[in-house]
Length: 362
Image 1: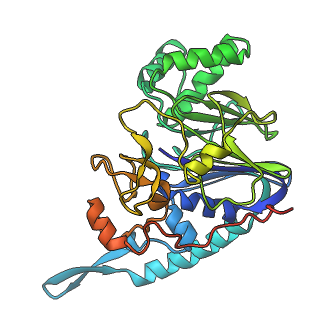
Image 2: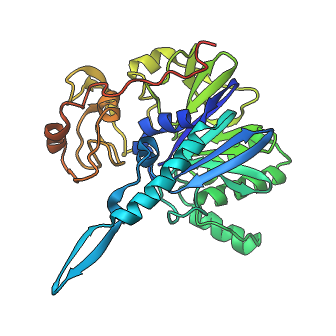
């Protein structure tokens, strides 16, 4: 699945702000983050395998800091306080350092590891041909394409990701069709009938190209002197003067094309987009949310965790009730009814203050 938060504008924002916005959509992936940003006229990259929850709270998960203790013939497991404290102190300094950095150009990717192991090598952005690539979604059928590129084109891949394969393919097609984007896009959509997601190309001059299929969506927010992108609508983004979603196409972000959709954005309760996917995985319609009981745009099947519903439950739940559900990392709760009992005071309510971007009123 994965998630993307991106910003480009005249006023610098902190990396901490982009992390906070990504945290609100953390259900899209917590298997590490990658940030590409401009500093002192150069693009720099940060990659780590910390979860958004850890980065947001500035606190490491305690799950990995345990030790076995033996007392006579009795052996038990307990938290390794000394090791945890030492690592926590270093981690807090690291979070403070990266969060305080400010930039006028930031693209953040938080990964859900569906293709390739959870490693730094597989974390985005991935550098290919002097350009950086970020990917959201899954390129269905990519194994066949990868094998072809290896056997027939002599390509050697450095990661296990479908992102790298898709980026190499895109470069090959651009060469083949002499940069004709219409032909390249037609070829790619023909090869991936079930979609390939969203591929973002960033060169070292901060020129951004987005190659987007029919299946995945990315929202566009216009601010004075800049824009913000989010792979899922986020009600905590405020003070924008225009909003819409990017079309199915190859888009030059220096000459932004977007579909103005303020009306449907509001109808979707500042979050769910209105596009129908024609897919068995999603069923969305205007209906009564089974949590807050309001008439809203709802979906009846959500695949990713830690949503308060999951694949197979087929419950009708609106965007806010999913976004504002507060997950319990200590206990796995498997049914929507149990989740409602456990988290009823959070579901359907705004339990955290919305983020107002520093540049919003500038």
